[in-house]
Length: 601
Image (cartoon, rainbow, N blue to C red; front, side, top):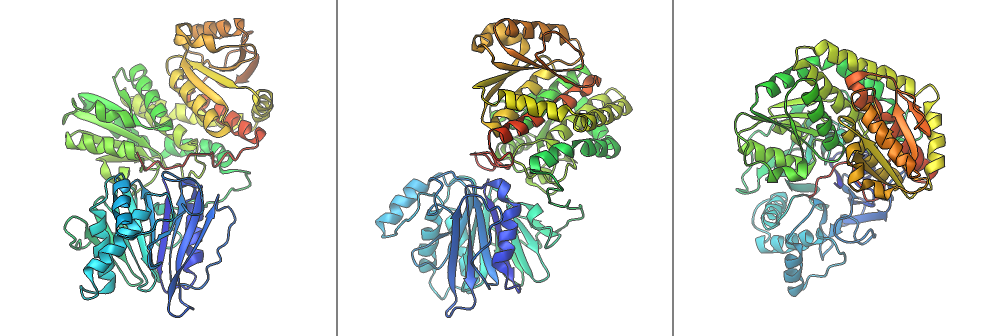
């Protein structure tokens, strides 16, 4: 979840380079941030550290001339959000700076043993045990066991083998001007530059500096110096001959607000263009996915959070359009349902980042059972992209807001086209995606945003909000509720419309806002009946529908776009969630306690 960025090279503005990199990675965690650097102007050269609680925003760094620096932006796991718990952490001598993304599961017993040998801890983090273990390992190796930087990477690999859990660790030795890293589970990308070398937890942070990247695999370590990068196998401590260097060719979109107040608003507005691009460019990929699914014995769509809701939409789409069963499974639960997989099974992973650890573990387990792996993923070169047999790029561009918007509707678009492709009607699927793009463009530009803004002001003080839908609209009800509670902290829940009488209706009180997703399909009459039952008990009914009804207290009109209704109906709740956040004085891009890429279990 945390962001890591480091540089070693000829440029003496390393702290500024690292700070700029961390700003690109802040979506991975924004509880606190810090930078360690080698101060070349001091004699002897020593390590200086700057740490702050809170978001980076427009921050500058007090660290000046240096040719080696390492930084971190934190999503707290162990220990509260304090300056002491912010990374980097130091050993007892203040010689080494350590940063970490992940969880060290056996940190408590390691900490006890280290304290018994005289080490002093200044934080509550699991990370700090690495500093002291490294200190001991380097003393144990002594001064005559090889080149100094080689000793550092050797010590890190020895320590890494003692850690339980999934982690990415980076260590800066300022005197040697080198950074040692190791990973298992959490992502790390190495960048080969002209004036030095880089490392980051996301390739997007490196593309301004270099397009020659090495994606470190699980169980690997690396030594990064100004001249080169050497990759090692942690278990054997042997250097990896000729590690793969990817020559990245994809275009990095300009990372700016482009006139919008927040990234969430910008990314909502980008959805029509993303959908049109998918319709124009990804029909072949959708056909390939359809062919794979239709030839499989069993099909499983797997995702986490919003991606799981997209997967459940796919379950309905393949049933309704392609007459094909495709089972949706939440990524964190898939491991308990995988025993029946075999070589004729197909598992499709859905992820924006391609680094969600629960999903990656599910896909790796499926690989062990010889299932065919596909993926809908937004980041080329990500762990998921590299893992599967057939990755399909969403092409949604950078998504900086923590909440998924354009990447969510992009997944729906690919699944819709694939479902139609499975019936030999790919052009009909493409046409529906284009219609959805046109309707979203209209929705965002013809006064309905102002209607949703006024609605947000009306319901901002509510204690609860409920969303109901039937059939393909049920997962959209779950997604709508997730968006609202993620960003506005207003408690929201999504339910299947048919479940109202099985307990849910007890939650309705006078004035309780209830959103009803009511496309013009076979579910309309049944969901309208449910809305009437809610209204009879005092609920305030918000209808998202192409059809007018006296039941609606507020009617958000959307066009009738057939099976693409889920794509269109995703957008009004996104806009309402955004406006609720603003009305309640919250930052829609960085909701509390959340991070964009969930790389810890």
